[in-house]
Length: 142
Image (cartoon, rainbow, N blue to C red; front, top):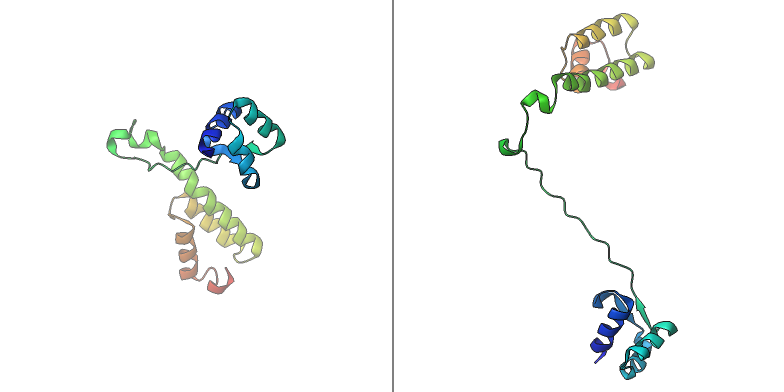
């Protein structure tokens, strides 16, 4: 029988039925309420309330990267210059860190800097391996 009152309360509160809360201790009063006026009184008393809206959880959509969804050629999608910037900046930052920590001297720094500019290293890891193999930096010091 309470479902009927819930429906009326939902209309009055302008929310869905699932958001209507009825005080469990006053359920008998709610059962006796039959008209909209009765329900309004109970709402004013705080026996019936509207719950806050439920949070919506958004599902992540899988990104489709197939040839059918691509517009533009390979390097117009991600230009070669941008890729170059994304590799060179971290390498130069890493070199600067090593020089400031005193792990490499100015001469080594200048030499490796030019190699970086020449595009010799793919990544920071590649640069690190190169330095360790040549004995320009100690393995444990990193």
